Length: 178
Image 1 (cartoon, rainbow, N blue to C red):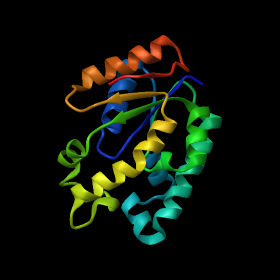
Image 2 (image 1 turned 30 degrees about the horizontal axis):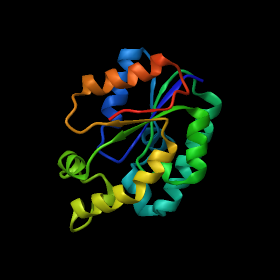
Image 3 (image 1 turned 90 degrees about the horizontal axis):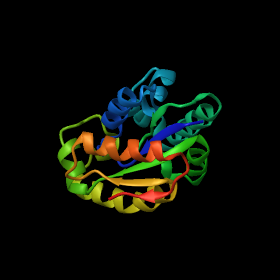
């Protein structure tokens, strides 16, 4: 399939890295969150509010299943919670080479603290919520990943270079960058 899949916590840079990587590798970018919003004709925050997180997570699984049959040689950025489901992790491995963009809680907080469109962070102490969610999700991200790339303190160019090096080395390579 040749797909490059970007996973990681919200605010780790999946969308920006995905966009820049799509230009660099001359591949189409698919953002699963945007695909869900397009199909549902409403924002993710509205989906969460009206139908709940479980409904949204089911939509994520459906999108990944659809991409297995249609995506080829593309960059795919997935929502931060998608790899938590065991079924989704298995689907991601079928879909392509999975890159976990790993970031520390403080980095994430600085990037998303003023973003009111993130339903899981609309709490009294968002940094603590981020720390808790990262602690819970990190094992799932690592289980889904073929390659782990630490993004803290790196430029987008450095991150892109690391991903491109792994992609060029051949799909299926298992390595850890850090």
